[in-house]
Length: 389
Ligand SMILES: *Cc1c(COP(=O)(O)O)cnc(C)c1O
Image 1 (cartoon, protein in one colour):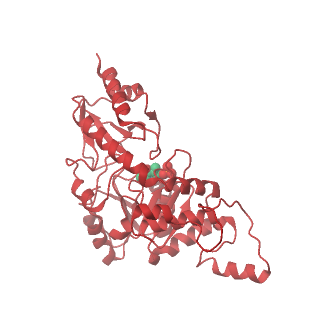
Image 2: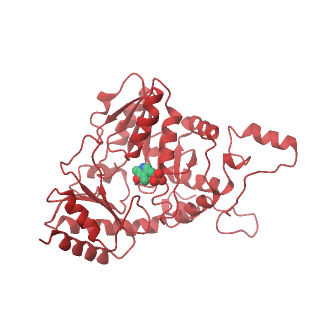
Image 3: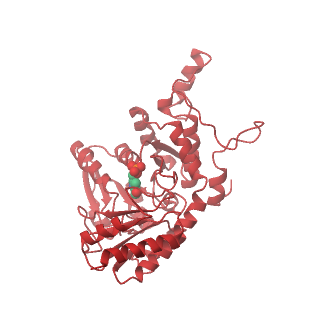
């Protein structure tokens, strides 16, 4: 297989040559029960299923999901992948798989906000100590404890796209036996490959760019071989699986990831620069802008950027930001991102520390595949409506 990620997206997890006439795509296979020819065969498969991926019952996965797992393992450059019903479930299960009572976990302040709730509602009540570190990683070493078991970061951070030096963090963690997990949703294992930079565990919300069409939720966790077992054992114990229909949708979306990201990237940068020139707009947050504090790390470790950007208004007024979003016509108002459509939200920064801004509200845009000139015209008319006195 080629090392080129675009070629990987096209060729991974396809029906193999040598099987005669075959479909281009892995078939959608629906099942619950799996039938065997004999008791002996069934027992043999059950004997292997804790250590190998075999088809034994749909609670342990189905062939369509296996094909998607293979595609993700190949993109991430990892050993194996587990799929979860949502990105949040993937993050929660990754935490639960590796943490036990008495352990300490360090989470980035810029984490996707619902993960804080997992920490509060599940980890802490079960005796796992939770701490947070600055999104650029500067205070990480000072926060390490004798019982630190896992460092959980997100590259780049949600909403403001802060970056930390992942290889440097890996160098702190590895000799101390601390596992390093990264939420890789932003880079989608296409723009960024944390396992190659020293992480042990990579988590993605496939809901975003891999799915890419606003019609499916799913999450993945891909690991290095040495740390695979705890994740696999817990999800089998809990009966975690995904529907073959949903896996098929994500596989279908993933084939065009590279082509879509090129458009998202180009247009989001164009719009970020346009916003920077507007007098109504304060700071614009996008890691590919040279002014961004994490820009040098982004250039070093990522191969590109996506359709996300955030900005604050020159005048810090949540009512003004809300009026602006309400005035947009081509942007939908809604959570999530990574689909073909453009979205705008008024982002919540309250509840987290280490903020690089004093602004109380941030507008987060996802630039979709609409024509960027139409999107700029829409932003322009909304600014005019919003700031008219
Ligand atoms: C959206 C998102 C998730 C959660 O994914 P869902 O499928 O919506 O549960 C996790 N991490 C990041 C960075 C996200 O943006």
